[in-house]
Amino acid sequence: MGFHTGVTRIVPGHLCPCETICILCFPFDKGIVMKLENHASQIAVFMVVYNFHRKHMTLKTTPAVKAGIADRIWSIEEIVGLLEKREMEIAA
Image 1 (cartoon, rainbow, N blue to C red):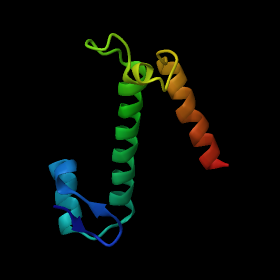
Image 2: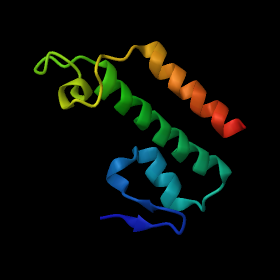
Image 3: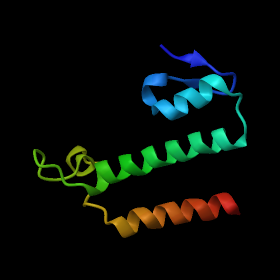
Image 4: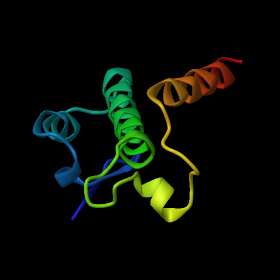
């Protein structure tokens, strides 16, 4: 069960205890919002690495290759390149 902060819907079970306490006790300010954005970015990068780069023992390949989304295992350099490209698009 989540609670509504007025800015976004947060489910406490998906945040570390420190962030949950910050959200519950203090109004949103720029620092806390940035902390949540950083957390979301970390999860996104982890999911890309997990699905496109990391070879799984049971599949013998990545989930993306097994599902037919990718034709090969992506290198870390390719993933970093995507991140840099996205940052440049945001900055422009």
